[in-house]
Structures are given as C-alpha cells and as structure tokens.
Length: 401
Ligand SMILES: [Zn+2]
Image 1 (cartoon, rainbow, N blue to C red):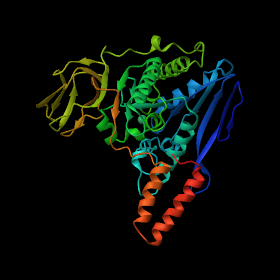
Image 2: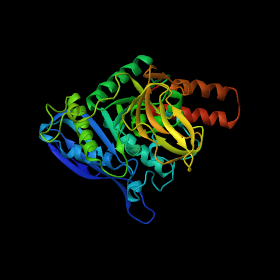
Image 3: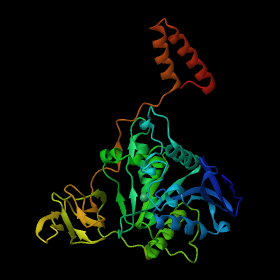
Image 4: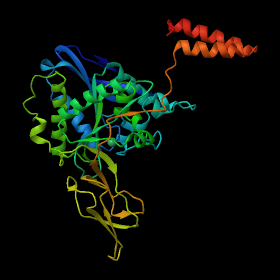
C-alpha cells in the first residue's frame, strides 16, 4: 500500500506523511502515517487516533498497536494515522485552531450538504475519509473520554433509508458487533438515533465510515484525556490485535500483547446498554458523587448530592434507569441542567434506525426527467442550457441508471 510518502511492499512496515493542506506561513500540515503490509494478502484494517488533540492514550494505542505487528506474520494491511489532528496536538487541545469546533464532526454525510463552501477542517476531514473509505474493510477510531472514566467501545446505530435497506443495515450492524466483541471492551450503544443525528455523530470518523461508506467502524474510548494510562493503553493494543485476529489477519497474538479477555475489565452489567449524558441536576451547586466509574446502579438509586458552598444539602439526583457509571462529569461546580455523569443505561431499542432525512440518490435518469420537465416548461435560454449541461453530464458519467 502507498499512502502519502509511505510505501510498503509485502512483509514490510513503512512510515511517512500525508500532506492535507498548506500553512499560510509555508510548509504543509502533514498527518503521520504508518503502514504494515502483510506478507500475504488479506483485509485492510484502519486505525486512527488523535482527532481530538489532547487524547493521549488513543495516540499511544495507535502507535503501539502497529509497532507490535510483525509484517511477516500478517495477512492483509494495517493502515494507521496516529494523529488525525496535528493542529490540536500542537496545542494539547481537543480542537484544531482552524476553527474552534469539534474536528470530529466534519466527515461526509450525504444529508449534510451545505450551500457554504467547505473550509479547511472539513477539507482535511474529507481527505482522511476518502483515504479510509477507498481501502478499509474495518476501522477503529481511538479516543479518550472524561477523567477517570472506564474504557468502552461505542457501537453506533446503523442507519437505513434511501441509501441502505434495513436488511443491509442489519447485516452491517452484525459485522460491527462481531468486531466490537473481538475488541473485548464493554460495548455501549450510541445515543438514540434522533440525538445521534442532532449531535452530528454520523459525521464523526467512525460514524461516517460506518454510515456513509457502509464499512464496519467503531470508536474506542480509553479512559481520561491528556495523559497515557498504561493499563488502558495495554488493553487498547490487545483489543486492536483481537480485531485483527477476528478478521483473519493474525493467526496468533504477538508475545508482548495479551489477549483482550485477560486484561480488559468486562462490562459491569449483563444487559445491553446505551450511552447517556446524565442524569442532570435541577439545582446549581457543588456535586458530591456517591458512585464512581464502573459502579452499578438501579433505576431510582441516588447518584449525586448537590450541596451549597456552605454545605447545605440542595438536591439528590437519582438514576433514570438501570446501568452503570462510565465516568463522572468533570468539575465540582454544576449549573442547573448540567449532566452529572456519563452513564450506560439499559437499552432495548433497535441497533438499526430508519433515517428520514437522507436525500434520494441522484441518478442520471431522475436528473434527466427533472431537467426535461424544466426545459419543456420554459422557453428561456436557461432551459436549453440546463438540458445541454445535463446531456454533457450523462456523456461524462457514461451510464443512465
Ligand atoms: Zn475524542
């Protein structure tokens, strides 16, 4: 495989750089790339890290997971961009300085066409997406979450509608589940579909690769940000290798990589859960937690006491459902309406979800029909010109269907 300046032949590892945009002061923004090209053919597993510039453990897992692979014992290819957002890394911050928005929300989504031209962060994300979608059979995007949080894998819901049938979505969700099981970390289904779309999570790296490209992809959340947590790093490397083995790329794990089941903590509950930001406070005050990360609760259990700075008890926040604490919200102070934790709560809802806002795919025949109607209903030059444009478009596209 060749990627930017990295070019690996069979049985080799190659490192290099992928230039994605130029700096106004000279030079270019280069994403680091590592390719491990197996001795024999097989699937391509993609790893990405550091789309949030302060998520240290994810970057460490990406680097160490590719380093641990012996190319001579690999079937297929592992392709890795360990730092997708160097502009965030340079300032040890989540976002890049191209804009202050989340860089993990600009990946392609057919329903998110904007009239405004794409600015630099979106252009970078689109290049990363195209590179992955062209070659990947599976992808893991490595992240971290709140301070002290437990590690888990996020299972996005697979959307269906005009771009994918329900049966295809169910098949893709099954493939995804198999890979997440092999990763060996607790699996947390993503927010319900409406909230998922409202948050733009279908435009995250894994969300777009899964839902736009139709390739099984998931996000791994490996503890807190800013420092590498050794135990979670080792668990993440083990998980990546577990996925590679599941894909048939490795017969066995390298000697210095443990099986995920031996070093990763199981889910604290034996039922399916989904991610929830909350419960939330009704009262402003100081948050005193009763439970920590990984601790289990039942619906109605007290999770947090909100107290005043003089110690008066103001409110007890209780659990909305059965589940466990993924991580406590950062910060002692809480305003009314703030979530007090990231939690995993019991989820019975479908893993696939119908999407109503997907536009119909534009086919040549639908465009011809539309344009002929327009041309016949008007005698203006516009009608004729548009019809000629369409005929040229068909000519260049080569097919009508
Ligand atoms: Zn992140």
